Amino acid sequence: MQQKDKFNRIIEVFKEKNNEISFLKSKIHDLKNTLDYWKEKFEKLISFLHDKLHSWYTEVLGVYDKVIRIVEVMMKW
Image (cartoon, rainbow, N blue to C red):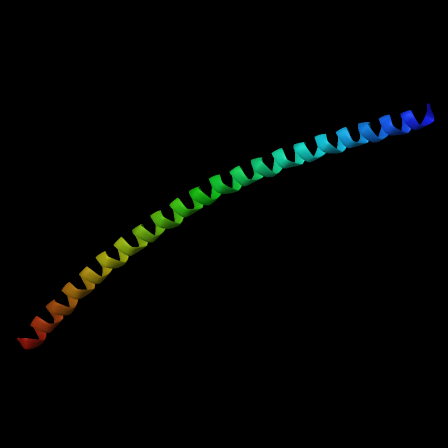
């Protein structure tokens, strides 16, 4: 009888550990999904900022080029 109790206890512990492992796998999956979500948001933000900075830089260069041309014309007078 004692051996049967030990065996049953081992089976119970195994089931408990198996449940813990399943729970942890689920948490890992949830964390991975959360990281993927924030990675996508971060990439979109970086892309947006890059585009805005690039367009701003292009506008500034355009104004700078116009100023240079005006100065060059004025210097010819």
